[in-house]
Image (tube, rainbow, N blue to C red):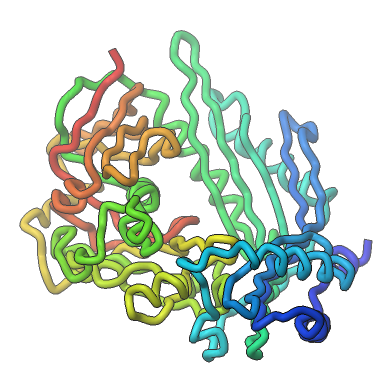
Length: 461
């Protein structure tokens, strides 16, 4: 199949949509309108011992349309029909819904919906197609199985590619558009040895296209992680010094991102409140950013669901809460500008993009000897957290999570058979005793290794 056909997706014509909506707005007493649209073409494959387990190909389009009637009330509707007929139906549905809009919670256009956007490198790389994806993943699975005799299967795996287009338009002339491509590979190996429990681990890689995916390093990481858990033992229940690997610390921060979410604050489901801004919430050596436009963020977009430019936002500066994540509506309530974290819907959502954890190099901790590569005393190194959907209570701050990790003593790593780590996120942030200087880029953000004192570990009885 020709590359042009493989790469083609159903394109969104912004000027055509604007013309249609401007005409429709004159047929009804509409004050203003805005629209968010996305189209994508996706391929994904999974394999099982060399055989195709799942092959998927799809083209998706979706539109979210909001209209404001003459009374200023808002109606919202969504459709997958990206044509004039679909827009007419959606427009009429949104107008009818506007009659029942909530007068106490009326969103508006972002004041930055026409501001200058950051320049991002967003290439559209060639599609490989399902046949080539299957060939690549079969080879990756085979290579992973060869890494160690104990690796018997790769039960969870996937290789995917997508080309997508995003658009934001409004009746005041805002016109945002982005097109890009993305690819991902996931390999999760399972090792089995006689008389022992199966041990598993995996790795993920993201890139702008399949040809840029670091598949070899993904194989090596999945294998080394799995092999490192072959020698394991139970651990006694107690309080331990913990070192979170970058992936694990980012997972924990993400699970409690409502602390920084202005919508959660206003809805009363956050650990923070309006008065928390400017107060100390962590140790002074910690700074945290949400950098949606970081070059390593493959999924970056120059604008959010409301057309607001995305940017590098400081959340915690030297231990103090500097900013909340805002949409237009929450920013208006706080008397600030939106900062590029909104999704478009009947109730505008707010969320994190790409967390970056930094150490304040001007303020040294008292525990400079703590380094996961050289520290001699016993500590627990946590690789990843599990069951985040069930073991976290964001509004209370508590967590109790199974984890993958090792007990490390004088450089020797012994995998922990099964255990949970429990605590309170506020205590975690205030009991950080060391942040290593070397940052690592992961598929979900950037962080160094972070040391926390006195967390509770419950071993399997």
